[in-house]
Length: 217
Image 1 (cartoon, rainbow, N blue to C red):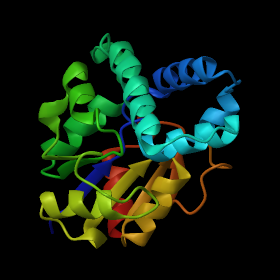
Image 2 (cartoon, one colour):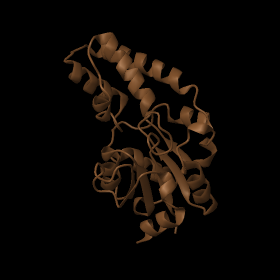
Image 3 (cartoon, one colour):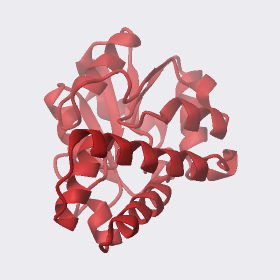
Image 4 (cartoon, rainbow, N blue to C red):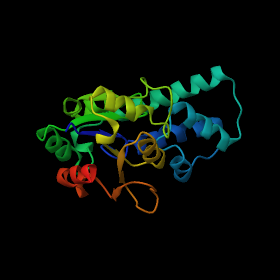
């Protein structure tokens, strides 16, 4: 049986949420309102366009589409500057080991991320070679909880959705996996992640053997 593991990026393999927060906060400061870490939680797993809309809702600001596009681009430039310093030392505990062990067992590995910078980040981390397919924000038109990103990942690695296991840290991603007919491991706080087949605090708290058993049961 062909098996596939599909990984979200942020909060699963690397934590770039802090850089997103810094860039969004800088934008909010420029627009003249406060943006907190609690506000930032609402942007997890959400596309850049939708994130900007949420930010503007928080600030009570209405802008034209051209202005929105300019701000989204500005935020991304700041974010790309910040992630430019990423190295293999920034990979979250257990993630690289898990990816290598899965590859050794002939499990197909895909990335399913809303981030348009995902390929660049994987390259900076030095683990892009471990992925058989990379689906990022440039290849999808629907944001999670729509399952498009995961279904495209499954298609690219030639594994049927029911034989794919998704690793996600955001509620929208867990819902996307379920809508796509896939099992899902939640990475993070069990109390905050609903509907995952298993929840663990991090990739260092699950083995490939456990993941395979979860997929096959």
